Every structure is written in C-alpha cells, then in structure tokens.
Image 1 (cartoon, one colour):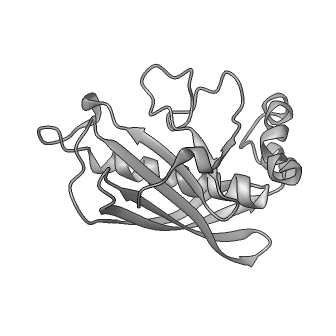
Image 2 (spheres, rainbow, N blue to C red):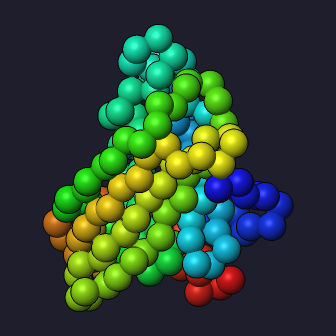
Length: 170
C-alpha cells in the first residue's frame, strides 16, 4: 500500500511525548507520526539500523511495536478511547530492511462490547508489498477508567484529552 500523506489529515499527539513508538522526545524511539482518512490510521516510518536483527533486517519485536502502536492509535483516534493491548498476533510475511521507508496502517475491525475492540495493523514496504500484519484485542476505556486503573496519571490525562477529542472536531 502506497499512500500520499498530503491527502490525509494529521493526527496531533501530545507535546513532549516520550513514548517509544510515537514520542518525538524519545531519543531512541521510532518517532511515529499519524495521519487519517477517517476510516484508518497511517504512519510512515524508517526504522533506524540500530533496531535491526540479522544484518539490516528489522527485528521482529520492533515490527510488533509498529503494529501495536498503529492499532492502539486506531482505537485512540477512531473511537476516542484509551486502548490497552490485551492480545496481539503477528504474522511476519517478508523481511523488512532498516532505514527504508515503511507504511504502517491500522483500523478498528469490530467493537464486540463497549470495553473491547478488535483492531488490525499492516506494515508495507516502500514498494507497497505487505511485510507484516497483526490482529489485536484492546481493552477500550474511558479517561476516568484509565486514570483509576493507573494507565495514565490525572495530570497526563489532562494533557492527552485534546488528542482523544480530535475526531469530534474534524
């Protein structure tokens, strides 16, 4: 899958974010940024060579992180809820080379209940070849539940609220 980011709407993240997947302030992170067509969530990223396994082949754990992050952000943006990974299954289809552009795509597939979400994620090479895919089940929760369960502090949640409310303003 090849996408044109200029045709997609950027999804804003929290300033000062240090998340390994999406934190621009994490010096060793993936620095994922997200975009949407209101049906799916997209990211384009090049995995640094330091995150390779064999030779320049991206480590499977890093690919799993990309997939987990895109599915989580699909829950965040498309449903306006905090999503916490419960289960995730990954299929590695083709090797991925570090330093090469990748497109990562996520979607919400089903909401079996108010507290459970099924999501999918895919990683494509710069040629549009499917390299990895995942399915996941996420615990979807309100902001109050996320704070009560210790997923986020109340102070952080206050900063994160505008991120959850972006789709409403789109």
